[in-house]
Amino acid sequence: MKKRKIFILTTLLVIFLLGMSACSKSSIDDTNNTKSKPNNTDNETNDSNTDDNSNNNPEEVSITNSGSKKEDNIGTNRNTDNKSSTSSSDVKGSEDTQEKSIPAEMDEKRKEVLDNIQKELNALPTEIEGSRKEFLERLDNIQRELNSLPDKKYSDTGTTNAMKNYYGISYEKYDIALNKIYDLLKKELLPETMKNLKTEQNKWIEQKEAKAEKERKKYAGKTHEWVADFISSYESTKERCYELVNLYITD
Image (tube, rainbow, N blue to C red):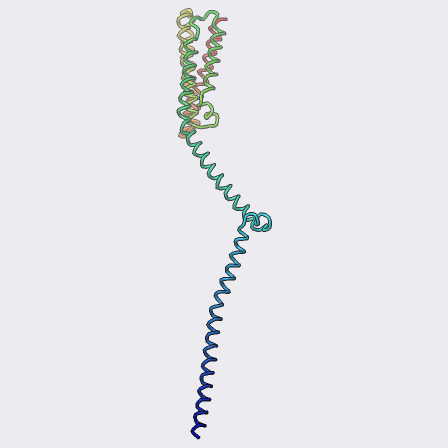
């Protein structure tokens, strides 16, 4: 009887140990399965990285992946745009530099032209006999020099300040020429002839000023007001120079 009890207890102990062993094995398997899952993820990630690296290969992109090639072309265009933008900035900087240098260049050119005009004025004949042709040539040269003023270019585009400069200078130079012609006539003409000319000249001055004022009033209060005045005075004075030469200076 005692042996039977020992046998039963032994059998139960074996069964218990076998059950514990089975549970332990199952737990170990579950643990292994859990550990293997991240490893698979790593493999998938590595495979994905490999594919990405393959797609990033320039040679493969340009040969096999037309979609990626299109993206590359867009990128190239962007770089080109950026380059163009930089170039435009450089050009703008260059233009700014040129713009800043224009006044100095204009002043230098203007001085050169004014010097040439002064030479023409100084070279006007000092006798009325046989000097008409030379007088007319000198007057033509003055206009040619005036046309080469840097202000003329901007005046022709309608820039108000440039027009004031150009026509103001032109009026001034022909006014100097007219005074030189008139002084010569006072010296050379007979007193009676000169008396009549003086009367005519005073009348002409009144007409010139009235015409200039009329033109100015057309633009009263506007930026073109004094431009109109200068233009009118310049045209009248230039015309009077040629008129006096043709009337009183002989061939």
